[in-house]
Length: 216
Image (cartoon, rainbow, N blue to C red; front, side, top):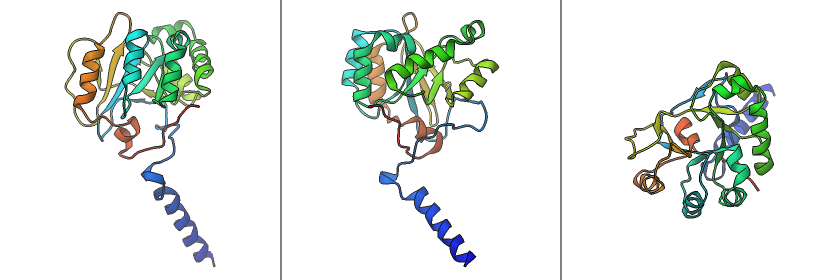
């Protein structure tokens, strides 16, 4: 009897793991087992965009954006200033994360992260799954805070801030900057997207598709 029950449990586990619609998996809430920073994977290449400034050009870019979508890291104040673009991001189900400030500001203001998450939640009704600072640096106290909020810290193996598109290789997580003073050309960004078969961050990290969290 015990053997029969054991075999039944094994079969149910296999069904749960492998028989998912379209081979997709459920969202991963904490990728690492401790407060670590993700910088690269082993499968494919992921494009991420750090967005803290832009209106008309960003609006046009988002309007014309097609799948596979990049992972957008959005500054909380930009989210507050740009409700119509945020609405379009939600309608198109583009994956998003929270873009913080430069890491030094969290040492000076310990409650800053909580305030940023509140602003994010106002628009997206959830705590973000992915988080990075603008300088891609994570002091130890900030790591603990991010971990407590059950967010994954993401840096990048390729940082594109100005000029021509960078060379990339398998496993890279690419960060393209759209800030007021440090900014890549939208035209260059569009050409870069067309030139490479980018995949989701989950595919780059794990080698399989996951069911991305979407927002109503």
